[in-house]
Image (cartoon, rainbow, N blue to C red):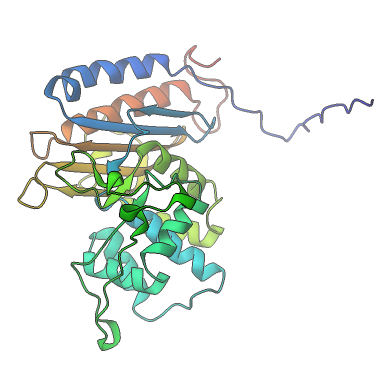
Length: 320
């Protein structure tokens, strides 16, 4: 047998980042949840990816949550992915539909994008190809907001596989996948927070779209201080940019409990991380201070354990 010597990095190769000990951060978040979600009995699912080291963390984040409008970020990426491959051709109204869908979460524009990508089933299949588990990440239906581009009336057909089942895809029937967060409230759109942040990390690294389309999509997703709950409780002067898509619904006859979700990329002068926080059944509306506190804990720990750009070495002993 022969032994091949490992390649020796050249002097210009960046060093591999060492993993971070995230135990103290997880302890802080757990303490916060004990005083909020756990005490009041509501759900908060958190997914985190350290894009610098590749570490993935989940706090109740691998379960199926009602997605609300968070699926619109991946849907925009699917449109651009098809465009790159020449499977669709951009139409005059497409750009406006995409911007309205992401900036204002406009539902009618979302329907028009579903029409452009071929409906809901191709989107769900693409999510699976991207590495999402089918049982926790899907759209079943989107029928209340018709698109009338070109004078035609369009609503997408349901993807019945997610309620009737599809054994070949590992999907159970009898509507079992729709029972989140409670059986009485059909979960017709779903994501697992940790799977969503893993996808956002791949997007940010350029593994989903080409460079131009990645930059375009991130530009559409960028939000300011009054638009992202991730920014609400950060220290004054924090040097950050966020690229996120959220989804909300206040309790009503349709949605009997409160929902507030946000997911995407937080870019700092110490590197970037992906974060998703899904909050449902919180009796307080909007109750986003609890999410903002999680984002603050994550941000401050990330900054403390990652060197600023242009420097070397972490600022404390948390790196292994």
